[in-house]
Image (cartoon, rainbow, N blue to C red):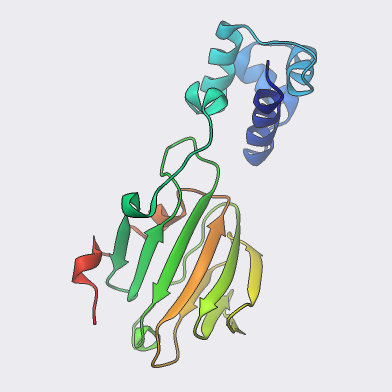
Length: 196
């Protein structure tokens, strides 16, 4: 078993807040066996890997695939009309991806909209690339300038706000790749419908 596979099993188990005992109960494999797999002391059989993948709700490819590359011309861009935010997805939206990276553009005028706070699992980092971003976390506003970085538990209700007349661009990295699913109550349109 490659070192990467054992590390991936452990990282995914911890990301899902599972103890070895929980994974053992889900797979029928012993705690000792799973621990040795994670520490690279054993090589897992194909059937054991299948059980682990099912228990962790990923495909077998998750453990064996190489790096995921999304070329600039392959990125999808969506526009959240109700929030005047466009989202450029930098990472694959594969179900078994453990992280999401996006470039978000917050357009002028979004502060005047009736915005609804969002929350989702995981942690999030926002790094401001351009403009002045106001982030509302649990009702408290934080103002970020280019080069500023904010890390917070994504379970905290949060809003991205642009109080200026210039576009705000920031990089968002989240341990919850389905984070944008929490935004699905908004009307999502293709970027070609983006305001000027």
